[in-house]
Image (cartoon, rainbow, N blue to C red):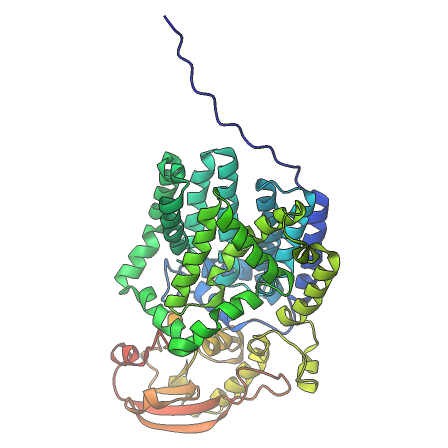
Length: 501
């Protein structure tokens, strides 16, 4: 009688040692400018909103899942400064450097490939700038990179425990932004069409999926009980990025440019081409393509697909190490190319100039959102001064047109005598409602028309001044006094709410 033996396990492909020293050097070189600029200028507008939302913790918000407000709350408990708030963002981007090198290693790359992949991440405009702001657009791509590492490692080792961890990572990503669901949909289609279908037959994958679904239940319940406001955010984002066609026309050029010039763009395009030609990795290449098409179709933001960059860079770096591309591609793997990239990227990604220089030298290259970091405390002081001069301030609420303005007044105005501000804009609309005793409103914003039908009188009383703190998003914003509220706030507030604007 024969003896039945178990089939031999699949042979695990060997990998090179992790390039600890060169990757650590690249990580340190990225960390230096992030640390030096983390406390420069001030909070970004979205960061102020996250801080306000963190003081009103919930399982969900109109415009996002709850992880970022919770993270902002925790960091604010440690210290009230932009530097402390941005520690998770800096760690996420530095972790992205290491993970990109680790992906290259799993793909068979040695020390050179790992260093090239890590350095490409470090000189990406998108990721270097991401390390300066605590935002969903920073944390979410890091989690995508971590997820991609687990999948690429599974392809090499077939260790199914990695697929369970993929579910845990997916759950964390879903609590940051719902975009990861799009990744799995696109990847699932690509796997069904071109393989490896073996992945879909692994019970561990579905155990991981179950973990992600169960973890998501509380925030889904919140969305359901609030009328699924997240579904309405697409229209608002579509308008913000340039209307029906403007955003679509700039999507690809902006996505490529923010990948980093010149090396990020070159390795992104070459890496995607390599993925699409590799039988085992082809599903990741098609996932990039499908996500790009989908985000173009819905007029989404260019950085939605940024979480796929690291795997493209990693596979390109491995090919460069093996000298597989033609000679005209190999210049990209030299230190002068990365030095040029750093010189080009750093001034566009980080606020390296002293604030006074921005006023004195308006032609200086600066990050796109520098104006949204400057002048918040000065603006709060200006609004507080106007509020203090109101004869009926005891029954006057402060309402702002935008959630950035409300976040700034909440952060800097409370100690100056301002009441907790309210705003009907975006997720702020569900955070604060003006108190019942407030019959008048100090309105901060360009457009007071929403108030006209609901108050007896609406008149201008001045404008915000940020003094020497320029350029500032808050400078010269008009101030209005609305008196004689016509109906109770529970009836009036829903009419002033525009969560999708």
